[in-house]
Amino acid sequence: MPDRSLRNLFLHHVAQTSDSPLALEITHAEGMYLYAEGKQYIDCISGIAVSNVGHANPYVNQAVKQHVDKHLHLMVYGEIIQSSQVMLAEKLTSLLPPSLHSVYFVNSGSEAVEGAMKLAKRVTGRHRFVAQEQAYHGSTHGALSLMSEAYFSQRYVPLLPGVSFIRQEDITHIGSVITDETAAVFIEPLMGEKGYVNSSKEYLQAIRKRCDETGALLVFDEIQSGYGRTGKLFAFEHDGIIPDILVLAKGFGGGLPLGAFVASNDVLKSLTHDPVLGHITTFGGHPLSCAASLAALEFILDKGLMESIPEKEALFRKLLVHPRIKNVSGKGLLLAVDLEDTDFCRKVIDGCVKDGLLIDWFLYAEHKIRLAPPLIVENDHIKTICGTIVENIIKCEATTGTL
Ligand code: PMP
Image 1 (spheres, rainbow, N blue to C red):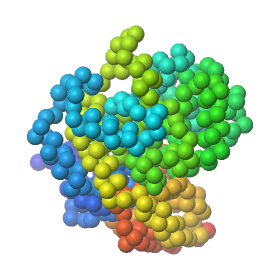
Image 2: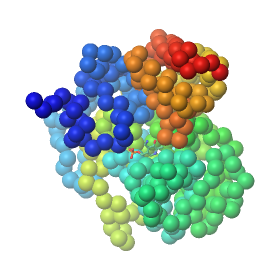
Image 3: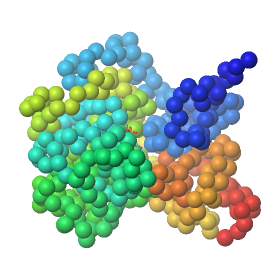
C-alpha cells in the first residue's frame, strides 16, 4: 500500500525549501492557536509577521465571506473600479502622511520591492541602489540584488549591477555611498532577518538628509514592521522620518496575499506613460485580499490593539530573564531573544515546539529566537510563552552543560 498520508504526499509532491521543514499538519487555527493532530500550539511567529489580527479573525472572515459573493478576480490591476481596493487605499492613505497618498497594489513583498525599484528608476532616471547589510527584501532577482549575504545570492548571479551596501547605524559612509547617481536607498527601519534590530532616529535622519541632498528616493520596507506590530501602524511613525516610497506586504493582507508600494501621485504617475503599464500585475490588489486587509486594519484600530503593545513588550522583557539570554532586541511585538549560541538556540526552539509553542530563528541570526505573536496576544499567553522559553533554556542547559 503506498503511503498516502498527507505528510508523505507533502514531502513528495510539494516542492521543498529545505531538508528540514517544520511539517506540522495543521487542521485549523484560531486566535493565538494552531491545531495539529490533536495538539494545540501557541503561535508566536504569526506565519512570519502575517497573522497580526489572529487566526480566523471573525471580522476578517466576515469581510471575505461578504466579498466572495460579490465577485472574485475581474481584470488585471488598474483597470476596473473595485470597491474593496478603493476603500482600502482611501483608509490606508488617510492614516499616512500627505506625501504618501497613492497605493500601487501587488501580490507580495518581493513584488512590491520590485515595483519600488522600477519606480525609483523611472522617477530618477538612475539605476544604482543602496541597501543595508543583512537586510532582506525578497527572493526575486531584483530584491535578491539588494541582499548583501553572498550565501543566499551567489548561486543566482548575475544579479542587478550597481548595488552598494551600508551598515545599519554606521553613518560615516553614507556620504560616499549615497550619491547623485543613486536611484533609491532601501531601508528596513526595524531590520527583520538581521534579528529584529531597531534603527536610531539619528541614523534614519542622516539617511533622509543624504537622500534629499542627492535626489535619491528613500524607500522604507515595512513588510514585517508594518500594520501595528511595533505599537504604531508603521515603524517610521515612531521617529517621524518619512520615506518617499513605503513598501508593504505580510500583515497588510490580513492573512491573504497582498503587497503594495505607496508614494505620492506625482511619483506613481511615472508608471502610467512612456511606456504605459510600467508595472503589470494580474492579481495585484486582489479584491478578497483588499477586503481582508481593510477588515484587519479596522480591527487593529477599533480594538485599540496598538495601544496595549508597549505594555505587552514590557511584560515580555520582564519575563525573558536568564543568564543565557544576552539581550532582547526589537520593538513592540517584533522581539528577538539573543542566546548567542546557534546550536543551543536550535535546541531551545525545538524543545519549545515540542512543548506546543511555535517560535523560530532568523535568516541571518540563527542564535536568536524570533517572537512575533499576533497582536491579540494577552498577558497570560505572554507568561506561558516566556515560561516555556525559560524552561527549555534550563532543560537544554541540563543536557548540554552549563555556561
Ligand atoms: N521585505 C521584508 C522586510 C520581508 O520580511 C520579506 C519577507 N520575509 C520580504 C520583503 C519579501 O516578502 P514576500 O515573501 O512576500 O515576497
